[in-house]
Length: 91
Image 1 (spheres, rainbow, N blue to C red):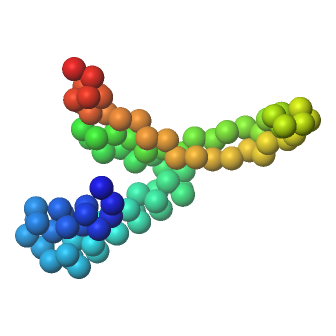
Image 2: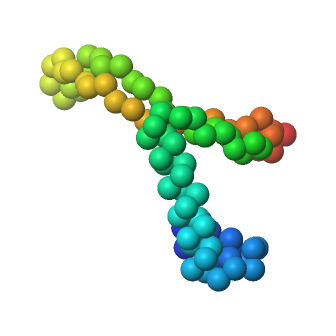
């Protein structure tokens, strides 16, 4: 499912126009992204948790040459599914 399809489902479920549903969807994603940028955790009950995970700088190896290279520290977004969501798929 892509954004267009999701917006169409939101529109039909809530009885809104597609434009209103898209604005709602965009608002929700903007709020989540802004909270993650501020190092906040976003918990959605029954669905899961979005949080920023920090990776330390480390030494890696170029598989082609075997040369050691420095890998910079980075951040990524992690999604941890809620217990009920996990149970839905692991009965």
